[in-house]
Image (cartoon, rainbow, N blue to C red; front, side, top):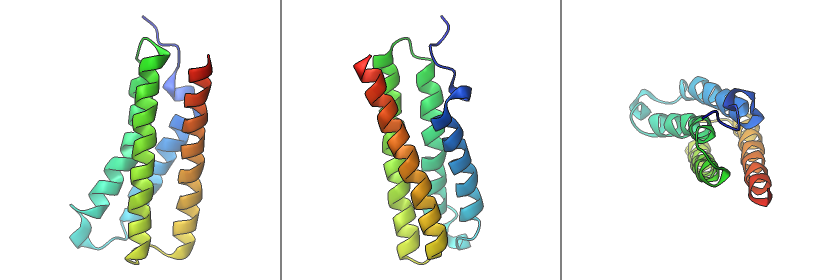
Length: 121
């Protein structure tokens, strides 16, 4: 069965990929002691966002797709929490923090609106 959505064409997936790329670049400046701690956790959260969106497109119904979108949204909030921690412990400058905060809020909003759109159809 062909899926109703092509994840490669979804803006939320593309933005999620960009966030993951930027997360990896950003965590390169974290202390080496964080390699298996916060760096790893925020990277895994970032990768989880577009991964859940992609996996959800393979599901046979919007109801099941929504579950994966909700998982992606959960990962986005988890990522935001890790961003806040990174900033509060001074691994990130205020400029970087604000830039990434804006990106994650956009992604969270887009995922929420996509879920709402699928729910009302």
